[in-house]
Image 1: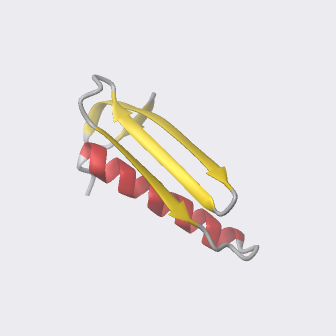
Image 2: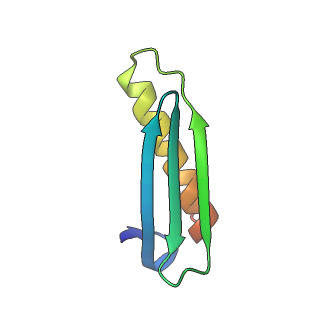
Length: 69
C-alpha cells in the first residue's frame, strides 16, 4: 500500500520494466478504481531522462486513480 494524494486509504501499486517498456498499475484499497499504463522507452543511457519518464508515468496513473492534480 502506498499513500497518494486524493486516495485517503492509499493505493496498491505495482510497476515493472521489460525490453523497451515501463509499466505502472494502481488500484484503490476497496478495488473500485484502477488504472494501468505501459510506456515505450527510449532512454539512450540518460538517467535523468529515465527518472523523469518514470515519475511522469506514475503521476499519470495516480491522477487517473485518485484524481491527483
